[in-house]
Length: 298
Image 1 (cartoon, rainbow, N blue to C red):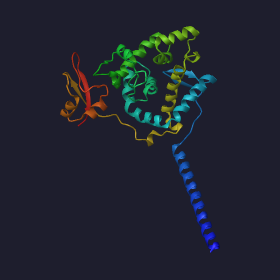
Image 2 (image 1 turned 60 degrees about the horizontal axis):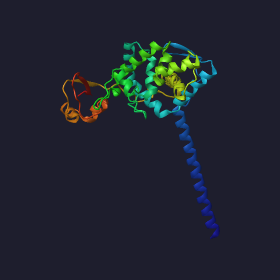
Image 3 (image 1 turned 120 degrees about the vertical axis):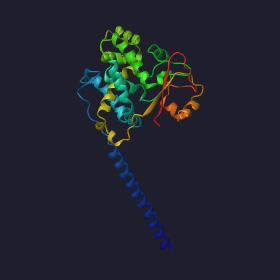
Image 4 (image 1 turned 45 degrees about the vertical axis):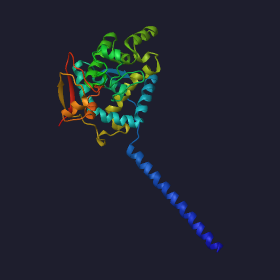
């Protein structure tokens, strides 16, 4: 009896161990397959690159390592980088068109990416929208901001406002790299630091951590988004977000209830808010000018 019991227990233990070992092998194989599909890779940085049409040499160890850090951060921040690549397919054509019309280097679209990741974001300090305008700066650059309308959330208008700021900044500095840095720390703030340190080159400035990283983040996103496959991202295998087809309705009279108005137009409040995030109230007062509201194509 004891021998039989021993044999039964031994067989049971052996079966359990075999099952666990087999499961571990299968788990390891799944993990290996997942890593292979993910395509984790990290090529060497180039010897030099261009940003805003300006050549940047990457042979200085400090410049190279600061850039390397930002490329690594974005390469392995998969959830954010994948969403950025998906959204860029929808928004970059519009942003690129406006930048060209305003005479701003196309690379400035990457500034928009590092500001908001192409989200209608709100920062703890109160900056809002794709281009993260504070209220005062938004109004100074032509955006309407009140209790019913906040055009910082209007992609087209906020992009033109960003162009207005950048053109003003460019007139104050010798190149677009410095102009882009001022978008983070302000024109006055950057001038003060340059004067205190007697430096004219952004890469020679000793600044606060946020602004120090700022231009390098723009550079990193350009490198990654212009050649995503080299860093393990394959947009051809992604469901990229397409530009949304809409119908534009010119509104010249006040709307007391946007939900009712949307229904009258054959839509709903949800779609109205998704396509027009700049409408921050449930009504719209029209006094001097007209507004254009976008709704889904019927």
